[in-house]
Image (cartoon, rainbow, N blue to C red; front, top):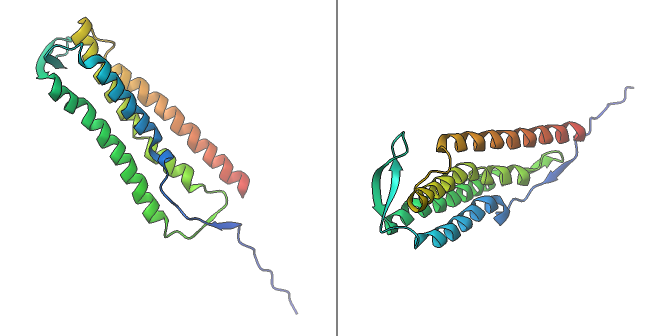
Length: 174
């Protein structure tokens, strides 16, 4: 008689996903800081504010301070809602996963996905500060494209470190 060898499955756990504020904490923080910065600089601006510039840095379009508030703060709110919506959708879809291996941490992945929206939000905040700088001091901080490249490089490094860390954890768990 032969003995049957049964393979034991890798340790699994049941996952119950719920929405947490930490999934959109960075976009909320940038929204909060942008509102504070806007409140600080709002009354230093003239009634007509330059917000669009040519390649040589000169103003091509102006808007009222109130319209600038809508241009600058509404997109931040949209970024936060987008991060929350994506996180919430992943949680709803992930709720049907049932059991997952011990090496997979869905909360960490959802937190990354919900907070990664902060990268374009940071660029947008820089644009807001650059508009304030031009209208108050008459100069630009630095080219927006250069700042965007710096943010993308830093974001790429952080994302790479996250993926390497996740890969190592999954390899060590198996």
